[in-house]
Length: 444
Image 1 (cartoon, helix red, strand yellow):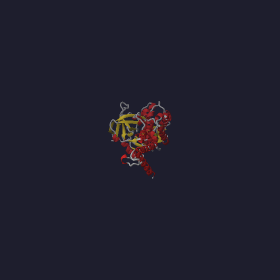
Image 2 (cartoon, rainbow, N blue to C red):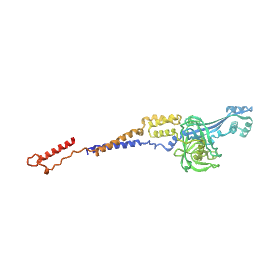
Image 3 (tube, rainbow, N blue to C red):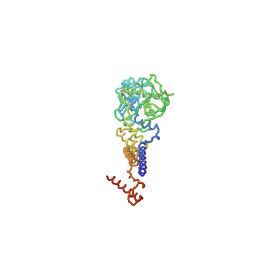
C-alpha cells in the first residue's frame, strides 16, 4: 500500500507531462486572421510576370522635305511597335504561359512588322501635321522604306530582372485560333503557379485576376511600381462560351484591361483555371468592365505539353509558403530561417527582402515553435513511459518476501519447561524454537 501511494502520483505526473508534450508538438501557427485573398496574393504574385514583345523599325526617308525630316529625326528615324501583356511561370526552370496575341509580333515576318510600323508612323505624322491620314499614307509610301528591324521578346520578373523569352509553343491570336503561347526563360528555382482543372469551374465560383493592366500605370507612380502586379477579384459569369472559331472561353466579371492579357485567372486554391484573353465590346467607345473572357486552363495544358514543360511546384514556393505561415502565426525566428533559405536559392524573389526585414524587426516577439524540439520530447516521453511501467511493477508486482508466522496452539503443546503444566511459558519457548529454525533455513 505504501509503495502504491508513491508510485501512483508519480505516474500521474509523468503521464500529464507526456500529454503536455503531445499538445505542444501539435500546436500549429494560427493564420485565421489572414484573409483568403491576402494569402492568395502573397502566394501567387511572385510567379506573375510582365511580357514585352516589340520591334524597332529603322526608316530611310528620301524626299527633300525638311519638316518631315525633322519630325523623323526627333523619332531617331525609327518606329517602336509592339505591346505588353502578362503571364505566369508554371515550372521552376522557367516555362511561362501567356496569350498568343501578347507575343504575336515575334511570329510576324519582316514585311508584316514593317507594314504595321509604317501605319503607326503615318498616323503619327497625320496627327502631328494635322493632315488626312490617307494623304499622309500616300505621301510617305513613295519616299520611305525600312532599312533595319530589331526584335525583342522580354520577360520582366517581379523582382526586376529582365530576361530574354523564347517561344516554345504557339496557338494563334484572338479570332484565329487558341490564344495560347508558352515561353521559356533561362534560370532555376523560379516561383510557380499550379495549373488547375477548368472542367471543375462552376458559375459564380470566386476567382482572382492577376496581371499588369496598363490602366494601373501612371506617370505619378515610381518606376519600380511597374514591377508590382495588380490583383482583382470577381466571379465566373459563364463557364461554357465559345469564340467564333469554336475555341472554349470562360466569362468572368473581374475588372481587367489591356495589359492583363495572358495573366492568370486563379481559383480559391491558388490554381490557374484560365488566362485572360479579351474583353467584351466597347460601348460608345468606352470599355465596360465586368465582361472579360479567359482561355480555359485545359486548353492551355495542350500547349504546355507541346512545349515539353512540366507543372511542378518548386522548392522556392514550398519554403516561401512555409515561411509565410510561420510569419503570420507569429513565429518570426522560424519564418526568418525559411525566408533566408528562399533568398539563398532564388535571391531575386520579389517579396523576400521585405519579409526578411520584417521578421528580423519582430524577432523579439517571436513565439516558440515546440515542434523543433520533437526529438527531445520523444526521448523524454520514452523515458517517462519506462518509468511509469517500472513504478507500476514496483507497486503491484514485485512485493517484498513476508516472514512466516508460527502458529502455536496451546492445546497441542508439550510441557516444554517441564514444570508440570502447559502455559504461556511453553508458548514462548515454542515460538523461539520456530524462529530459530526459520533463521537456520534462511542461512542455508
